[in-house]
Structures are given as structure tokens and as C-alpha cells.
Amino acid sequence: MGVLNSVKPQPSSGLLFNPPSLETVLSLTGVPFDGGTIRDVSPYGNNGTITEAVWGKTPSGVPYLTFDGTNDVVNCSNGASLSLTGAASFECWLYFSVAAADYVMGNYNAAGALGQYGLEKLSTHYLRFYQTGAGGSTLVSGTTQACTINKWNHIRWTRVSATGTITLYVNDVADATTGTSTATTICADGDRGNTTIGMLGSYATNPWTGRIALPRLYNTVVPSHFKEERILFGV
Image (cartoon, one colour):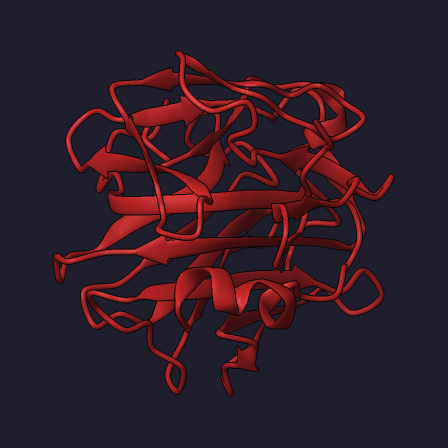
């Protein structure tokens, strides 16, 4: 069995498993499928412990987890590789049927901890990213690119190290509204909590309701895999 980071359909063998890049610090692909742990196939082994979320597969065979919006979460702990100095990016696929504000992923330690962050889908279906820093919190709320209810959406955020600019994407289209990070490091040692999918963890507000597939976190800005994977999600 290969290692899955990005996936492509193959006419004879189903899915092609591509190895993750060295810049990948978290790649929860759902391979192998099932069980109480979702394996991190990045070089860093940040496996996720699943609480309550339920396994499923798309018709094309891609594994996903369904979260009930109450107490479901994937906890990937607080390994040093999850401290992102400089540039960073994240991508995953979402499916939701509830028009609610809920968190997709993030890292929360305690109020005031520098560099902690979260990615939220608002009730309007736009994305919002926050990161705390010495100058306060950076809040970037999307205004032009909304997710679509009852369909799979590819979402992504990027952070450019030179400028601190944070950009949000839905289905490979950048939102017109960007923000500037006030912290040079995302979740540095001492302030880093657990990186989670579905958020919750130490931040017990608005956990995710719906499905999440292929969450991947990088310690640089990695090109989107939307075009390679969209056929697998019917987009």
C-alpha cells in the first residue's frame, strides 16, 4: 500500500497514493481506514486520536470523518513539528448540511497564548481565520468566496512569511479579503496546545458539524491539490 498525501483517480487501480513532501507536517488521509486513530503519513508521525467522529468513504473511495458538532474531534497532540515558523498553509475537503458557525481546525492552549490559531466556517459559509500575537488577534473574515452547503468544498489558508499575509481560499479561488499576522511563529513552544481537526480540544466553542476529508498542514506555502482531487469529490 502506498502513502497518501494527494490523491488521483486511476482507471485500473482506484486511487494513486502520492508520498507527502518534506514540508508536510500533518497529513491525515484516512489510510489505513477505520479504528480510533487516523494515521499521519507525513514524516513527523503526528497521528490523530479520534473522539466520537465516525468513519465514512466517498463513492470514489476517499475516507472521511463525520463530526456531530457536540464533542467529536481529532487530536494530533503538540509535537514540535506543529510549531510553524514563518510560512504555512493548510488544506482539506469539507461537506456540511447545517448553516452554523463552527471550527474546522486549529491550535488552542489558553487565553493569551501567542501564535494560537483557528479556522472557522461562519454561518454565512464564508471562512474566518484568527491568530493571536503580541499586538492582539488577527481576524480575517472572507467576504467574496463562500462554501456551498450540501456539497464538498476544498478549503485552504496560506500564510506568507515575508509579509505575514493570510489568504483564504474556497475551491482554489482566493477571497478578496486578506489579513496580516501579528505573530512571527504559529504556536511556538510554550504557547502551543494540541493541533486538532474539528477544533474543540481546549477550545470548547462551536465544534465542527459535517464531514472532513484529507486535512493537510504544511510548514511552507504548498500549491493547492484542488485540481488533482476535485473529480474524487464530484466538484
